[in-house]
Length: 253
Image (cartoon, rainbow, N blue to C red; front, side, top):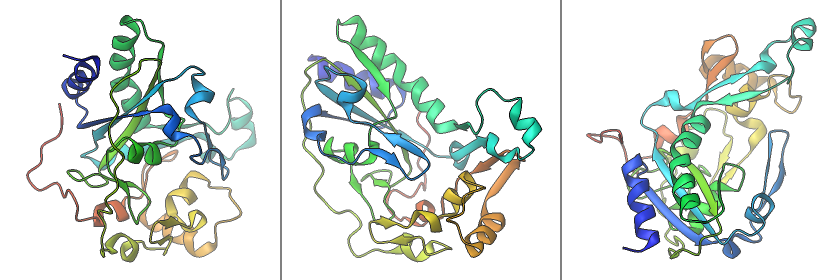
């Protein structure tokens, strides 16, 4: 059995529903850098200078609680904020799950003698397309043939030279625009997100000045908040997608 097949088998045993691999060189030129005021994306080489292969791992996110975030920016009291060492931190449950799930793969490759690391910092959706996992749909999310957009992604960067998968070239969405029509603030155009109209962006940036009052009202109405400083990301466009509807599907172990 090849190293690549062993790795994919281990990923399946861990609970990943799909694994794709590409040459790091094929990801050169993908957009990276500062993304609005939210975060920065990096090229694989910026995170691991001698990277040879990029492994994309997809996990079936069967429950909306995967989308819960805790954001300290909701603590508007200046005196309270001054006592927090790192102000404005955001914690995302699916990031923590993905890191935890990916570490055994990193450990496996490291024991084989290859420098490896887990990364959530590269452009995951576009990289997943290059790795053959699916297409980037009209809701801008990765759409997989079996699970639609109901997956969360993590990458493993490694110096191992693995067997590479073919890029995904099919447009699974076809003529369907259910996600575009379902968006309550019309933040979506086919294959494009107007981010300052997105209620998840509004929830993540409570003090942002580029969010209009209409979007703020929709955010307060539609975003679920388990506590003062937590919220569940809007998944209306994801839920509207008919591809890979749960039906009788059971969660991965």
